[in-house]
Image (cartoon, helix red, strand yellow):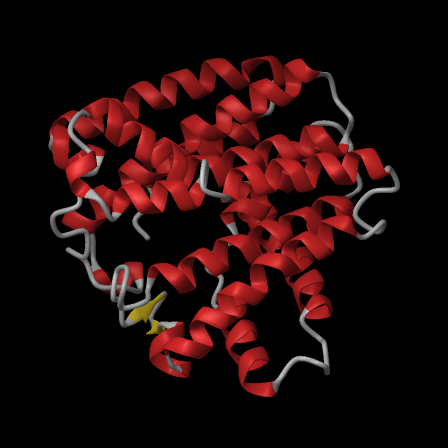
Amino acid sequence: MPLTTLFEEAKDAVEGVLHHALANPDVPTPLLEAMVASVKNGGKRLRPMLTLACANLFQVPKAEAARVGAAIEMVHCYSLIHDDLPAMDNADLRRGRPSCWREFGEATAILAGDSLLPLAFEVLADKATHPSPTVRLSLITALAASSGAAGMAGGQMLDLSPHLIHSVETATTMQNLKTGCLIAFSCEAGAILAEAPLEDRERLRRFGFLLGLAYQIQDDLLDIEGNATELGKPIGMDGEKRSLVALLGPVESKRSLRTLQDDMFHLMRPYRQPLFEEIIAWVTTRRG
């Protein structure tokens, strides 16, 4: 299956789950509008696409993978809402549209993010996600760890604390937490749904971390060299943040990207799936 087709399938499948999960008449209208707008402005749906791609390795039903992908997307969108707040990145735009706080106000934006996070776990806990309670619990536990203080939120804290980033190693840790944890879970989730051997879970999780690091390096390069129109947000927003690109410089960062490509190709070779070569190439060369 071509990568473009998988992106389209993932987007359609996940947005169907999101639409159903957000169709709740008990939610106050202003809050629901902010949640829906933030989730609909969801970009390419990279993380759900990875979940579907990795689940396909084990013939997991697409409906199950789509539900997990939707839960991941809720967590991702919640993090973006909060990232854009004045107290954090103070961003006016998100994917070419006003950021949530700009459109709905700070208080509503905070509550929209706060509401999307627990909704993700509601989706995972539902038996429609998987008939086995053990599998559902594994998914919940892994997503909670990936998005919490020792995962994505911790990485965001480090990203806001440049005085704590004093080496390539600490910058790598920050990016593994901020971006890598959720992408790693997106990949590992396919193996969890399949009740696959631990070796597969670890391999896909490792692939996700490498892919997340490559994604973040390319993202930071685009913040320096990219086009605001293509990105749908202003460039130069990283300011004095001490990212890997800031520490290594663009030339060495591009060399690191090539090394990551080779490592990912080697890691995924046992599955003999050309699709993953496309995924790796897209992440490391994308322009938006």
